[in-house]
Amino acid sequence: MSTLPDSSLPPSFGSPESQPSRTFRVDFASKRITGMIDGLEAIKQTVFNILSTERYEYLIHSFDYGSELAGLSGADPLMLQSELKRRVTEALTQDDRITGVSDFQFDFNDDVALISFRVYTIYGALDAQKEVRNLV
Image (tube, rainbow, N blue to C red; front, side):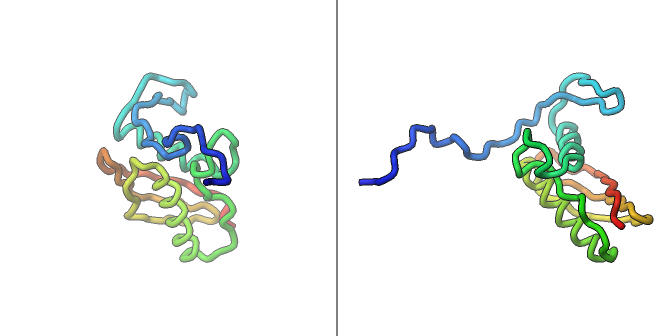
C-alpha cells in the first residue's frame, strides 16, 4: 500500500511534446504578423527567437527556452568561443526539431562577437548568425 495518493493527472501531463512547426510569421521590421509559416522557415524564426530571448528573464517562457549569452565578460577570445559555442548549441537543441549545430565561425571586434553557424533540423539545414554585445 502506497503512502502517497494516486495521481489523477493523465500520464502525458507534464511530459514534453513535439513543438509544432506551423506558426505565425512575424515581420520584425514592421512589428506585425504577416501570415503563417511552416517547416524550415518556421525553424529559422524559432532560432532567432530563442537566441534573442535571455533564459530565465521572462516568466512566460519555461526555463528551457532562451539563451544565456549575456554575462560573458572579461575572458580571452578562445574561452569566449568555447563558451558561446556551448551556450548557443545548448539553447537551440532544447527544441526537438533541431538535431544539431555546427560550423561555428567567430568575428570579434572590441566588445562585440558575431557568431555564424549552421543549424541542422528535421526539415534540412540553415545558416544563422547572432551578434553578442558587451563582452568587455
